Image 1 (cartoon, helix red, strand yellow):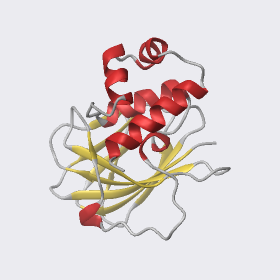
Image 2 (tube, rainbow, N blue to C red; image 1 turned 30 degrees about the vertical axis):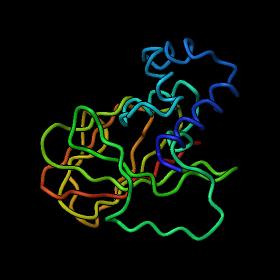
Image 3 (tube, rainbow, N blue to C red; image 1 turned 180 degrees about the vertical axis):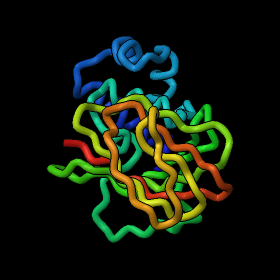
Length: 181
């Protein structure tokens, strides 16, 4: 199943489960009705920002829209991780593992390049993000006071406040765990 068809299937399921029309979901997410319809028909190419807006509007983690349930061992080679690009920054997020039922965490592989910072709006109340920088350098954390990270550094910060990931060196990568309480 392609990422687009997985998003289409999940988006329709979650929207219908929430009892929302396409128009109402679009309004809550700040998107056009046409965009939501295209995504539900697997004909759109959503950005990270679009999927996060839809997840927030539905009250679900981003991961629930892009990952199908898995039962077998899963290996994702770093070179094969399917990333979803941000619109306004050289930033891609590849979901490595969605939170299983009764657990509330998602794991992402982040690849970013210097240029425009990836600025994130607050996620649902109680969200905490954990970042381990793998390579490069980055300013990460609260939007008003990001912290410079070097390879191997770990940072935890409130994801329910505005936050930023700003690569300051080429080839920056990190593992991000989004934990929802």
